[in-house]
Length: 92
Length: 92
DNA sequence: TGACTAAGAGCGTCTTAGCCC
DNA sequence: GGGCTAAGACGCTCTTAGTCA
Image (cartoon, rainbow over all chains, first blue to last red; front, side, top):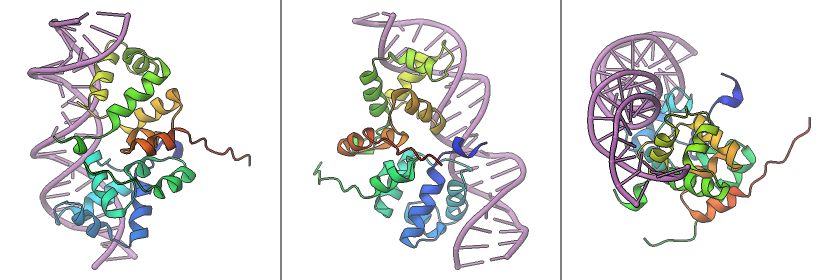
């Protein structure tokens, strides 16, 4: 599989996690994964072995303070732009 | 399932598809789905019955001329911003 | 502690085979 | 034509049970 064929999800999770100072296991537990499997699953996600579903990405988005779209941005420049986006408050 | 729990993927695919004038079936075929099942799968995606994988989203991204991150943006304002992003060409 | 992985169980997607307007 | 859906086959994810620095 060539580099450009891979999804950016794993790399973006790792970037945002490290910027927040979490370990893989701690972040997984905070996001609701059972503590006995949090380390394994987070590692699989960051290494693109498996892909998390969108509901899980929403939890990371809340914990790591970046929009969900951030995790799916292929271009670094766009990821940077998205990470700075702050939504206007929506009381729904 | 409350509105805020749903993923934006289906809605974003539909938005971008309609803006480009494709039918569900035609877009699915262009993206590489077998013509006998393109209509069913595209409908399932747009109605959030099933979730396409990232490789498929990359094909839609190329066909519909929006970055992959667009399909995962929850906030309309951010989706709009992302859709206008054009990566700077780096000639090296 | 922190990160990683093989392999089977379990669950979500894809295909089939229709439907409606 | 254009869009939609139930249900089973199938393939990917999650859990288990470890390893390694």
